[in-house]
Image 1: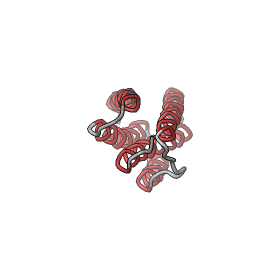
Image 2: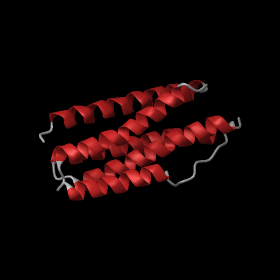
Image 3: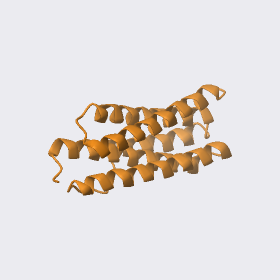
Length: 149
């Protein structure tokens, strides 16, 4: 089955958001000193890598291919988190706030994708991934809110 242009664009967008998240979390895990955050960020990086694989598999089944680059928006996000971490002396609340900001982009992308007409298996994968992304977002926000200024 050939992937239609709009569906392909939607899947590519989700893959980009996941790639950005995986790279952002990997960077954050390297930049933080707090062991709990380091472990959490590594876990979320692995989660996003797994999501990328699932989406790429779906895309391939539909006859589409994913390019291996990540988005400019995500590249800018990662550069900002690097800078923010350095400037704030690895301040826990600031790192969490920046990770939450990155998650906001992912949540929005998944919400938009779920408004599209997605074929059966892809729809359930996107729904599950949305739940995982939303859960990560909410967890990061809770940690951010609990962090001291």
